[in-house]
Amino acid sequence: MRRFGDTRVASLFKGYPPGLRRQLLALRELVFDTAAGTAGVGRLTETLKWGQPSYLTEESASGTTVRIDRLKSGDGYAVYFHCQSGLVGQFRELYPDTFEYEGERAIRFGATDRLPVRALKHCIALALTHHLRKKAKRGG
Image (cartoon, one colour):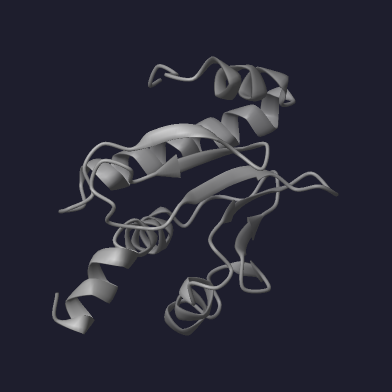
């Protein structure tokens, strides 16, 4: 398991119920692994935003923030994206039957769902390179 650089994030993870903690820790590793394997992303900053574990591309400014957390109601968890980025709509077009979506802001999972790792890594990589793609479209 990757060490926590922010004690507030570590404390939040410790407070999750054990089964959910395992799922969220696996999701956290997937975010870091995806960043490490995606050109242009660089090192992620892990912090809390809106009380949720958040992963920022501060070093490269390549993408938008990816957040993970338990659902406010129910036993599941989600990966959250900036609602005005258009990313969730893009994911919905690419993977209409793979994920359960929450509006324009999240991909949701039940507490016992198996992660569709390949598709989820693709979505996370798209988020972590969102600004790079926008810049390339503008010709900058």
